[in-house]
Length: 114
Image (cartoon, rainbow, N blue to C red):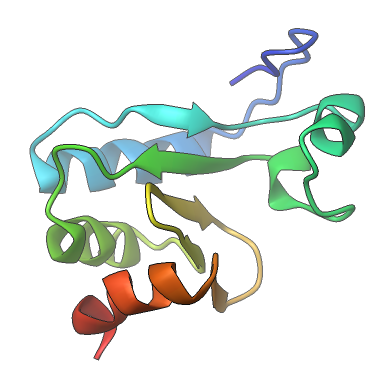
C-alpha cells in the first residue's frame, strides 16, 4: 500500500494476506479509509507519532458491515491492534492492544466486545 500524500510504498505481504483472509471471512469488500502514511502525512492528519500507519495499518469503514462479524474476522485473521471508532475499525499487527475513539465509539462497540 502507498501513502496517498506522496506515494511512498510499504510492502508487507503477511499483512496483506491477513487482510484478504479477514475480507474473505466477512464475505464483503473492505473500503479502506487509511493505510500506510509517510511521516509528513501522518503528522498532518494528527496521527500518533509512533502510529502503526507509519508501517502498515488500515482503517476499515463500517458502512455495510456487521460489526460483530468484522471484528471476529479480523481477530481470527491474526490482527492484534484494534481501534474502535464510530465510522471505522482500525486494525494492525503491532503489540496486542485496543482503544476507543471516544465514549460514543465505546458505546457502539461494547455489545460486540463482551
